[in-house]
Image (cartoon, rainbow, N blue to C red; front, side):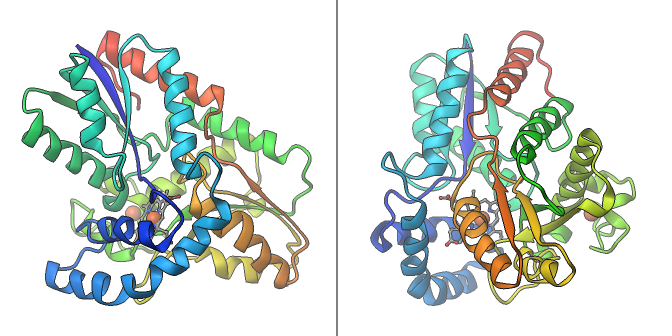
Length: 343
Ligand SMILES: C=CC1=C(C)c2cc3[nH]c(cc4nc(cc5[nH]c(cc1n2)c(C)c5CCC(=O)O)C(CCC(=O)O)=C4C)c(C)c3C=C
Ligand SMILES: [Fe+2]
Ligand SMILES: [Fe+2]
């Protein structure tokens, strides 16, 4: 029997340092997130980052936490419920990190007689620290606990026409009553090194002005290319002119070079260049979370206005938008009935 496993990143159980610490430990000790040898990862994560970050992160989580729990989890549950209501086959939701594990979600499917799973990493783009780690973890859990299950993975959907349509429609809705000078597409950042590591040709990705625009098999796993491509597609779909739109990367850790330009630098630069009314969208995330609600909607607004900006609007992620639910249901039905996957 077929079934669906939706997987997002996960959140701590509560916005307290006590719960944030083990969550960050699991997240940052992932070899696809902090990709250095184990001994060094131990020093960086447990010896340095986890000494101070849990307290700081818990404060940030407290600012955005809802009565029902973490926005990322609550929104993912709402989305999953809506998908379930329109699908004939079992659907379960799991998280890569934290207590809503992939194993529990697979157990739920297994108990319902599922032995063919469609794995849906809830990320539009491929990155080793998001999409790939979900796939690897699901395979490890399958091998250890559910060896008879077959897993098919839904590909990254950054340029899928149906997805671009619903994303564009929701952006247009968000822009309706907002007079803007500029729209910033702020994507989650990753270290530049990860782009080179994920390049199967080992020479295509140079992180310059050309590589991501020159056709290559490397693009299947190039996060930077996929962010550029998604921005272009939405721009075309909405008929936006080049000078009104740009792209940047947010949420970096110190020390390594991460993908540029950095979102927080853009917030400071824009007002100096006459951009006083700014709309920001965060299309690396399907659901609003700490990185969109605190870093962009709250901190970003503050940084932009401190630098001389005036009007600022963060346009929400797709969350449990019914059009997005319908697209997911269509992808699931195509796989269930015709064995086809979206492109
Ligand atoms: C969109 C996909 C994501 C990628 C790629 C990604 C890479 C990545 N992230 C960190 C470090 C942190 N990210 C944190 C939060 C966070 N990250 C994503 C998504 C991606 N991360 C989401 C959806 C969230 C929010 C989770 C929530 O509960 O709302 C955090 C935790 C918060 C904090 O302390 O700032 C860290 C740390 C790295 C190092 C990385 C790639 C190497
Ligand atoms: Fe992250
Ligand atoms: Fe590239």
